[in-house]
Amino acid sequence: MSRFKLELEKLELVPSHPFTIARGTKETVPNVLVKLTAEGVTGLGEAGPNSRYDEDADSVIEFLNQLSTSFFDEVDSTDVLREKLQQLDRPVQSAKTAVEMAWLDWWGKSQEKPLWKLWDAPSQTTPPTSFTIGLDDIDVMQQKVEGAKGYPILKVKLGTDRDKEIIKGIREVSDQIIRVDANEGWEDLDSAKQAIRFLVDQNVEFIEQPMPASCKEELVQLKQWSPLPIIADESFVGREYMDEIGDQFDGINIKLQKVGSLIEASELIEKAREQNLKVMIGCMIESSLGISAGALLGTWADYVDLDGHLLISNDPFSGLILTDEKRIKLSNSPGLGVSRN
Image (tube, rainbow, N blue to C red; front, side, top):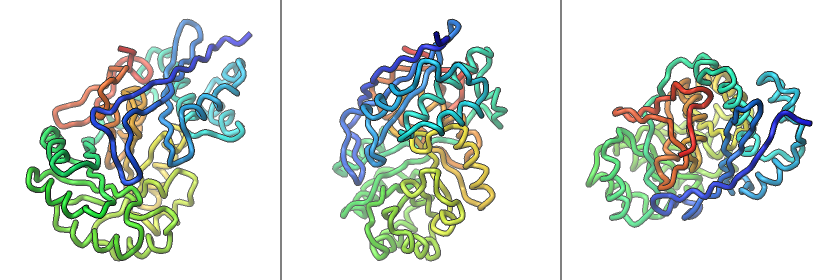
């Protein structure tokens, strides 16, 4: 009989406002909680599936239900865990993330040490996180910006036919630094260039995923031309050749839920550095549990966009601290350091 017990639970997260990007709107976000228990210790992990990558809560649960009760019995290191997860059929990346996260949380708790200390993180805090302003009527977006005055950086969703009006509206109420995320919304090179020509004088730090991931040649041309840095999101899920990504972008957005592994994500950071690429750690809509894992990696990053837990009204976990500078401070509690409310 296995010494481990694996339990799954759906987490129905509710955004504080309907969350809209260029691809659509979310009024609820079904994530999946993984609980891994052995020797009186329970590790927690969170899957944040995204339809952009053909994943949802049901596919996560179906994938995790294939794990045998003895799956974890031979796991005595992160290397063994990684190898066993890589051997699974039809991988669901967010489910792999959740399983690995739960084991790492269990391991840290078993060692009675915070995971960030076990991993020799360079700091207990991340760079300042941006705060996301989803698409909406301009007056509503202005209200959201007013409510985010304490954040030094805004991440503004664009990729529409009213992008100029949105930015002008935000600039009426704020001079905060803006990071633009088009979510593949500018469908051709001319549209992207036209948008960037306007944005270059709007105190914009960089542009995230301006065009569809399929527009590889156009993205190469855009990077060569653009006066603003270009960061890969949908174009980068962790299995691409880093030199090809470097031809198209100035940096990458690593999201654990699409990469499928904290361990692999840490290696991707090293590979990005070898290509002189900037590194951002991002997130889906997640609770403090999922964000805690992203924040661990964020201690090695240039930028973080780790506000998923700040955008929901019913975060079921606590333990992360947001400093006055809007840096995420990792907990001194064992493991990932978060607990159920």
